[in-house]
Image 1 (spheres, rainbow, N blue to C red):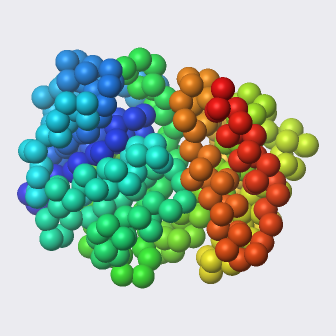
Image 2: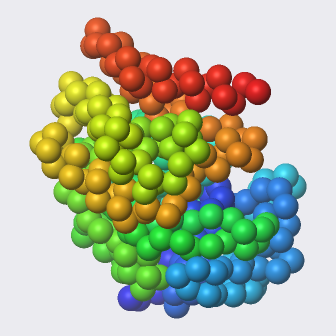
Length: 315
């Protein structure tokens, strides 16, 4: 690689902290992390501590920090080469607006947050030529403010739609991600990439949350059948939107593999409920229901799960 790259990680929850920590270890990477609350305060004082798959201490001088509760750090204003939005779904639009100040003419934007609609929001804000479809399958949870546990090694999946940046245009960034040990995987079909992650999330998260089960428990026959039916409702909506998904049989095989590979995981939605936080149901199953209605299609299972999760979070 020649020169350096400025990478801004906005919304440093669990995934964002992992991404920021690992990228900051790559020679030539200049990293800005935007975080909030006690977590941000701990990052400012103590840097990042990571346990799990890798034990890593990242001192605070290895990255620049912006604290949401204080003032946005202007150090990358107009200079960021790559912006990664890693927040909870409800914060994505706010961070996309904030990201405008960081952009120069060739800045690329990736939204790794869960949920439908983020790609469209980013394109509306920045234009299709700057926005890169992306998802992640890394599993991370927070032990304490400033301390994360990298529990599951996955990938950062990156793709292309329409006028979005090509693989060649992203080659330097992909190399940084590779050197960071975050396993970049390229997909030619960015819409299929986004929807494939959504289908897994709508199948696992609400059912695991309602039952209080770990992912692997959903492999029990009746539970797995329910997960499958919810996912295939969503797949019908995706196909109505013109997404070239795999066959239903392949989708079901993939769901089973994900549950097997993440069997010990407690899904993020269940973690949110247990910690009294707002869930991402509005950007997952509820979004499936809303999009289906545009086509005059009923999605009763996604509707039921949406209502149940929404009722849980009211109390």
